[in-house]
Image 1 (cartoon, helix red, strand yellow):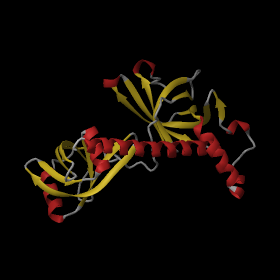
Image 2 (tube, helix red, strand yellow):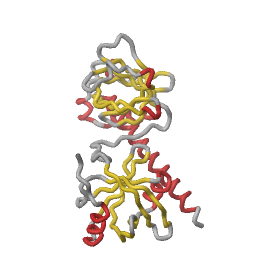
Image 3 (cartoon, helix red, strand yellow):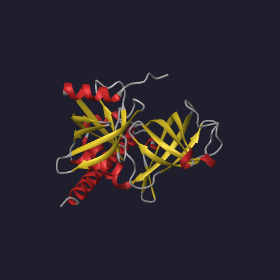
Image 4 (cartoon, one colour):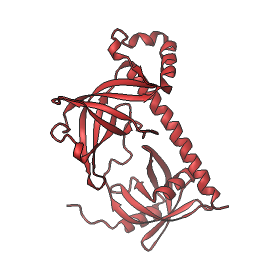
Length: 267
């Protein structure tokens, strides 16, 4: 049982020490963070400075997460109000959450358009189709509707094979990278055509193997979220890295647009 902690007293001590706190939001899979300090603790509220991208996240999401060396765990907080002129925010309603928020070792992005994978679990006679929630160079999360969820097969530790169809906009860039890499190109195994991504109806299809890491029921949405580890090889990994880099740039640009729109409201 977790011992009761007086968070407001901790916040007051952090304010007196002028210690830093990290404001963290996850926007379309990307962690957006800002290191700041607590200006004041008034009643059940705390006041902190922020910046334009973070304030845009706070405005559109209504919540943020606090991380800091003097905090015993990650804190989820509700945004009460924003002051765009002073670039500050007021928070309240604090609660402890899992400590893995924002701690992913690799950048993970949400797709801009629906990406559907074909997955065949070990022990299954047929493949299943499922949309991707987010993807990184070493993993992904996929959704299964409750009535389609293969509960016997989608268990942590079980392996599978998967095919992913990505927009073909990355393939020419990957080809140029492989041609310019000189001696490094010898490290890429080109002996097996099966290892190469294939083009199909304006998409580039890559195949990989993986294993189930975690299954999270989302009953209020009538679905399961399945987190998996993926083992990309050779050019397939280059295609995924290029896709992630492209999506990261798009997400950052999208956040800038949201930030500009938010600040235009105060004029």
